[in-house]
Length: 250
Ligand code: URA
Image (cartoon, rainbow, N blue to C red):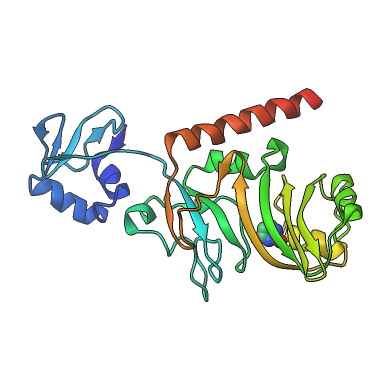
């Protein structure tokens, strides 16, 4: 059970004070009856709530997929730069969402945004083995030795040994290389630092897959949409599978 004013405020109907006035004005019905007490307790999952005659769709969590643009930081607040949350409509911002993991300011591509802390935790924890796939452009020729190095676990500049990763070469010539990188961790600047350890530089980085979710190519950079039910289920199922795989290894 939750207070009616809290539920309406969380859904973006204004501050608690504004919501109180809204309820007082006779705009709100609960289970078909006009209510005047904004402090009444309701079950938002079960009770029918109408505002100005329109039934409201209650939900606790939102799940968004964004094609993150360059120049925007993956944070909820920043003193200098625009954040991915600033790009959202107020109707989503009222849910206090946050990005699932981080992409660097200059990295583009698939970013999940939610206010579901539990799902977030599972998705970013390396113990759940969720694959993240990146398309990367590298300044030099990437070769078989690099593939082997990714497989055996690259040691970063701070002596951290990465979990095994997969490197697939799309093309490699005198102008540099285009590759896909699959990793399950999300250390700070991880892909860039993995290539630095091989004396190579990432010049373009785009995340194209997170678990079983593909970047929606119909989304322009900076655009986002809600995950479909199917995508959300895939995300939750993928974790379970990975979790079981992981447990079997223990
Ligand atoms: N690895 C990086 O180096 N940067 C990112 O943004 C994501 C992974």
